[in-house]
Amino acid sequence: MQLNEIRFDGATPIDGYGPGFFRIAGQVLSGPICVTTEGARSWGGYHDVSSLTALVGTVDVLFIGTGAETAHVPASLREALEEAGLGVEAMNSPAAARTYNVLLSEGRRVAAALIPVET
Image (cartoon, rainbow, N blue to C red; front, side, top):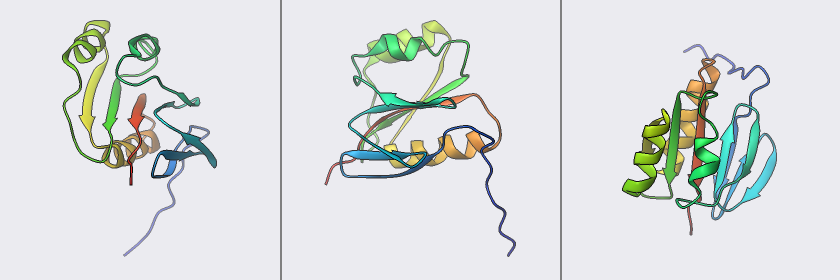
């Protein structure tokens, strides 16, 4: 088996996660976050629609990590994001982080809004 090093070419990968936190490009951030190719910042959760709609034009798809388990995103959030022109995929946060990193390594325009897993 041949292993290839993943290169992110200056973009911001998700390095890991744990109970209540994410590690992004070597920095630990607590609570819900939004991560894009430029960096990561706190996210206000499902009611913080404006920070996600601000991504329009810079990303093609937004992964929403719903914590440890896959859950439905509130319909009002999904509708607002889709009306704004963002493709939305909801999945558990570990899967969203992995999928974000894979597409990021391919040079895709992606972002992830993630709710942390709890113990």
